[in-house]
Image (cartoon, rainbow, N blue to C red; front, top):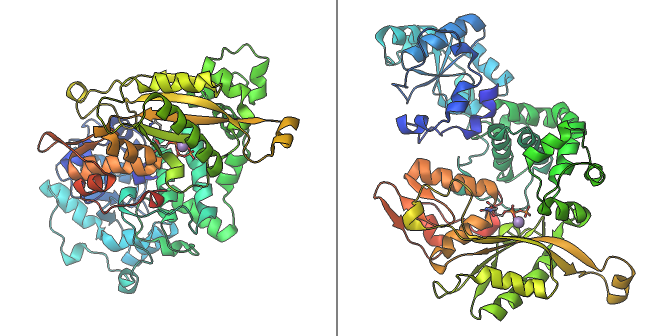
Length: 514
Ligand code: UTP
Ligand code: MN
């Protein structure tokens, strides 16, 4: 089960190889496999990475399956715990082909997996163990299946990486994606990143479908849909709701973690510690002993505003102010709205801007001046600036790690005069709104990479980097693209060029809502 949850995260079939397998984090390799515990000969490095075996427990039994799993692994075979889309050989004992097909379907495993794998009898496995390598498949090894099921074309085809497909903002499966995203959020609260990403990926695949899903069978052959996600989808399609999703939504822990991580400056770790100490709501912090840093104090103070969506009109109004500030301190500098608003969202949790100047070097030291200008005008409720620490020659391609970048950056809270109210109304109540704004300064030579990296969505970015690494042997971040094969940086002056260097079809920002 647990490996299945992580299924969407696994190295995809096409790029699998010794290198790909070596990339599966150690931690993940250690979880779940109860089958590998307590055996004298530990699993060897996979010798036959192109063969990925799943042993069907039905009629085989758990202990025999565990024994055969250990045996296979000790001989350098890849034997998976769950039937994910990386499996190439499904091995059963005392089962007919139709029984196996029916069993796989009853487990909500899409027929697509059944279609694309070898369904084999145990004889193939034991003979392969005997010869120490996967033997070629003879007719007598094959389970006879209902070919009609096999030949039905899948309902939808979806590419594996989010950066290979178009994900518009509006789609047809929100009732399913909201449920999966809630489970992703809850997994993130439990600091289970692999599980969280797996649910996010499953939701993202549903977002690309051209129409709403009616039956679970329509999903066969789609990538990134693990056993767990399929079970949840099936339940919602059949009963209108998922027990697991609803009980998570109602749980005290989920609600408290949601409320506490909603405080600017509070991450999962802090929220979890507070939760264990009895804190449930932001208001509990007001009269508690908890030490709050400056960001958290500001977050608590402006909690309500910061948890009210920022509209596009408000984002534009802030854009005008930021442009004014930037022009005042460095004429000719350019600002670009990034993040969700650049992808066409009508509302967001913050506003993201990228600042650059066409003359390389002019942008140095710009941020403190911009911040100072804004502050002098009384427009900032909070700000924290970090310096640019990225040096290509020094840091090389591998760093900064994953999604952290090293630009000069300002996390701030703007004091925005209310947009919607007329001046007399403003006088009556709240005259301004606190809005989270992220400012980032990029040297012109890195600008295309910075725009691409800051436009998101987060899953789109994650998959761009994963695709670059796994498929192209390149390393992408918000500063640069490094070709590990040629051992050189590849330059680009536009997003289109970066997609092209990666061998990807260009996906416009409005279709990156993965
Ligand atoms: P956001 O968190 O602002 O998300 O990050 P968003 O897509 O704009 O959505 P909302 O509406 O605000 O919630 C925007 C992009 O900036 C990148 C993220 O990867 C994301 O793609 N980012 C964010 C970084 O590269 N580094 C960071 O430290 C933060
Ligand atoms: Mn944003």
